[in-house]
Image 1 (cartoon, rainbow, N blue to C red):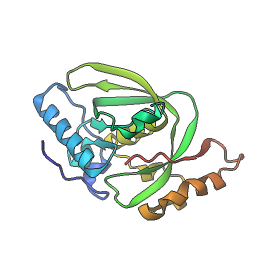
Image 2 (cartoon, rainbow, N blue to C red):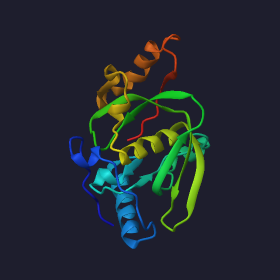
Image 3 (tube, rainbow, N blue to C red):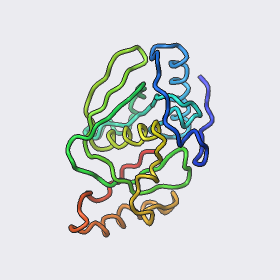
Image 4 (cartoon, rainbow, N blue to C red):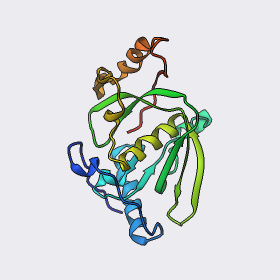
Amino acid sequence: MTLLKIARMGHPVLRRAARAVAEPTDPAIARLAGDMVETMLDAGGVGLAAPQVYRDLRVIALRAPAASAPAADAESEPPATVLINPWLAAIGDEVLLGLEGCLSIPGWRGVVPRHARIRYGGVTLDGRTVDGEAEGFPARVLQHEIDHLDGVLFLDRMPDLTLLGVDEEAHHLPALARDRSAPETGSARPAQEDNPQ
């Protein structure tokens, strides 16, 4: 496996839609996926999309623990999942605010609205079709990574850039977002501490 260089905000690869993978079981895709997982783990991230490593392909890797995982399991690292040509659709209208970071935007975090529940799918490295539902943190990570495949960064999803801060001060942002969540503004529930990167 090889550690890959991570593209940073400003590089054009992060702003264009990625191409669908024609042959998900191609050994070259398996090598790319393995390198992506190693790179993600080395960087301390919970998700990585192929455009973030300069490949304009619809491939994501993630390791988001289930929101319902028992506390005893919370200390162990979840296994990495790779999805090829992933898709998602919102389930319901509920939107949650949550703190997000990105390996392509180092040093910054912001409060981002995301669908609370999603349906998602894609293809695995062995060619199996996956179709499931996610909520909470896993749903946030999937939305963040699939956005990368469409040239969208978390900053693009932020309706209020005053809820953007540097890593060292970002812990203040969820409380600030809660203070600003008045009933009349209403479509999103207050910020959570979730923090995909």
